[in-house]
Image (tube, rainbow, N blue to C red):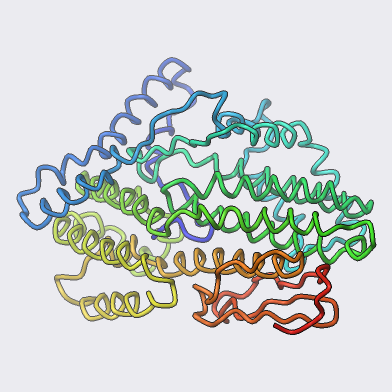
Length: 456
């Protein structure tokens, strides 16, 4: 899987679509852009795969068509703008003047402000966060207002493959960061209620993003939630939370924010069904001799250092059918194993690694699958599992601390360990969530306002 853990490099194909010389004039730019976009989107109709004589590959395609999981068939129907959260978010951070930063640059600026680890600011850090929030306050308010709309469809362009517009991801990430900075400002003035409002917006943004059948969106939603949980820990750990005017009702509301999305959690498989569609699009680019345009800068440097960059397109083209068959069969296995928690999927990933290693120096090695599309895919599954496990642990802690019935979560899908719920010293803590391989999971410690004061 190429787009994992914010390797959100829109491939060279987007450059093919948009790289028009500035001297050609606006009309020609628009014409050439449209022409090139049509070429890229034609790959999404899978012409090479459809016409392949390979019976196994054709059978696999027939299964995917039956599942309505080709790039064309995954495309969701549009919904009216007034009902669509995504329509309210669209274009919020687009530059109005040539000197204005692009959304990706704005996101990077917010990353430099966001604390690493615990959600705590020193005085100068808080001032930077406030200034950043003030600079984009109109956008924050517009994003929050859009969250009241009943539906969300970001219009993922599966037929464009890796060249699809993924700018909506940056818009969501920036909007969530603005709410996080607003929450920090609210906590600094002891306004926990306002901080909770900002936290609610962060969780709703994550739900919208995570509902898309796309690995990029799903994993970025996990990172939004990771940041939201750090804000949540700051809220419940704030001195204001222990004062008498903080009620069980507020903790109950926090429990609903975390717990309600768990009841409608999208299947892990959805992300990889969408990722497979991107892979199918990539093979069409390989058939067209455009493999290099799929590569990230890092991959280009790596293959150049191995002195194989020039040979890659021809080598991949020559074996494209068997390569794609290997990829689709492997992805089918990966998608099917998503019915099990992550800790039970590890053997499957280990088997894939061993198989690729054994084939590495043979003519049967699937170059595109083994060196590009399946790289780091297990890491993406681990991120999904941490996302789910962290939310389950917080739901358990908040339910106990607010006197709600314990939700039915027993074992962490990430670690395979039972959750450990401890009540002592006026606090509820939950352990057993994570693994050493994925550090950075925020602690789960909640003041025990239910007052049971006993270990459970």
